[in-house]
Image 1 (cartoon, rainbow, N blue to C red):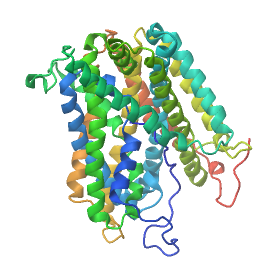
Image 2: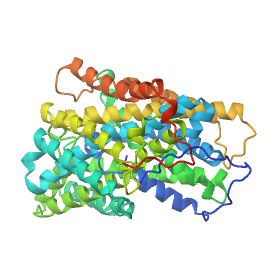
Image 3: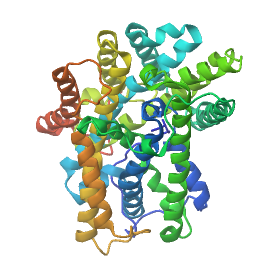
Length: 489
C-alpha cells in the first residue's frame, strides 16, 4: 500500500435520493483518470523487497490477492459509495449496527499505529544508504529515525499546515515511478550483460515452494498492499456511466498496480540473493548492487533521498486523516472521552495525535530490542494488516445486508454478483487474518511464542479490546451536540 492522502471518515449524511441532498458539485471524470488515481494511491515500491524473496513466484503471490481481495473490495465499495455517503462508518452502521460502525472506523485509525513504525522502518533503512549502509541493520538507528520522523510529523500536522496533500501526488512520481522504472531498466540491462539472475527464472519456480502454512504467510502482507480501495470507490459517482466505466477503471488500475508491484520485485530478485535481502532495505540493496556494476554508485544516495522524501510526504498527508474521521464520529456519538476530542488553536485533534505518538514511540523501541530489523518490520506489517482486515470483514457483511434490507435504495452502481463477491472477499480476508498468526518461514527469531504474543496482542488488543473498552465505558457527557464547539486545548 502506498501512502495516499486518505479521506477522513465523516458522520453519516443523507443517502442518495434523500430530501435535502445537495446537487452534484463534482465534475465528471473519465474512467482512465479514475484508473490512474487509483493506481497512484495503491502502488508503491515499499513491499518489493518482501516479494523479491520469492523471485518468480512473486507474480503468483501478487495476482492471487488481487483477484480474491482487490477486485471484490473495489466493486463492493463502489456500490456502497454510490448509495451512502459517510464512508465505512455509515456503511457498517446501517448495514450491521452503530457499535460495529465504530469498530470499523476505529480499525481504519488503529492500523496506522503499527503502520507508521513499519513505514518509517523503511525510511530508516533507506536513509541509512545515504549516510552509512551499515546502519540499515541497526535497531537503535531505526528506532531513533521512527521517533524523530513521527514527532516531527505531529508538529507539522498540529499546526494545520495547508498544501501538505500535494506531497503525496508528487511522491508517486519522485519516489515510485522514477526509481521503479530505473530499477527495472537497470535490472534488464544487468541480465542483458550476461550476469546470472540471483533467483531462478524457470517455469518450475512460478509457484512458491510449499513448507506448510508458513509458506502462505507472505501473502498476508499483500492484502495491505492492496488496501484502501474503499476510499477510492467514492469517485464512482463522478463517472458518466458508472455501471460500465467503473469496472473498466478497476481492471485497468489492477493491471497497472500489478506491473508496478511485480516488475521492481523481480528486478530486485535478479540482483540481490534472497538470503542476503533485507525486507526494509532491499530496494536500496538492489540499487547499490546494480549501480556498482555500472560504476554509478554515487546515484544511490540520490535515489535514497527521493524514496525518503516521498515516504515522509505521504506520511504527513496520512497523519491527520484517520484520526480526524475518528474525532468526527466520536463527537456525534460520544465514543471517545473529552480529552481526546479537544482541538488545538489550529483546529487540529492534537491530543489524539500525541496519544497515538506515545504508543508509536513504544513500538519504535521494539526495533532496538528485536534482534533482526527485518523481523520487526515483518511483525508490524502483519499486525497492521490484521487490524485493517477486521474492517474489511465488517464491510463485506454490511454490503450483503444492505442489498437485502434496502434493495430499493438508490445506488449509482450495482456490483455484479454482490453476494458472491462478498463471500470471496470475506473468506479471503478471514483466511489472511488467521494465517497472519503463523510465523513465516523467513522469521528468524526462532521463538514462535514471542511472535504469537506480539502479533495476537497487537492485532486483537488494539483492534478489538481497546474499542470495546471505549464503547463499554462511554458516558453521555462524552457526546458533543452538532451545534456545540469541541473544547479547544
